Image (cartoon, rainbow, N blue to C red; front, top):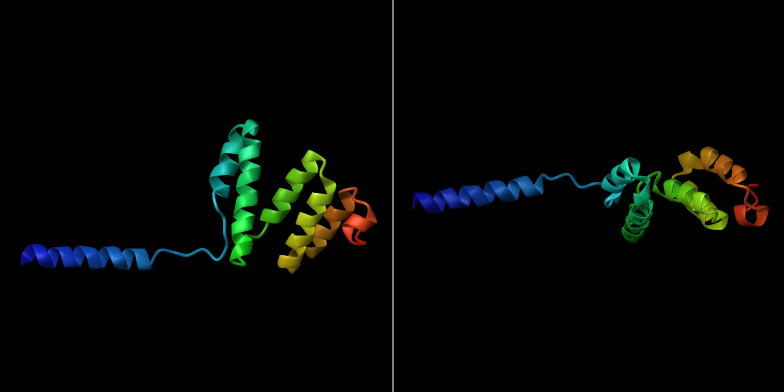
Length: 122
């Protein structure tokens, strides 16, 4: 009898603990771990970039792209020389987070993107 009560208490406590676990408003994926690995070893850049792309895709699926993720990915695209893809990421960041508009507009202008790519921002 005591074992049964103890089991019920343990199960109840476990359920309560899981129910109280914080749920993030945004999708971060493995961003933190990938960023750390990249900062420790720049050869981990492809893993970092893939981590960003995956977190963004998952975030889009539930309308929970984390702030700054698209901008960070855009900077990686710029480093790769893919200005058009970078500008698209910056524009999406600006669209999802209007408070970033001034900064994103400046980044787009300085990216060297033609006005047709930059949507007239250049």
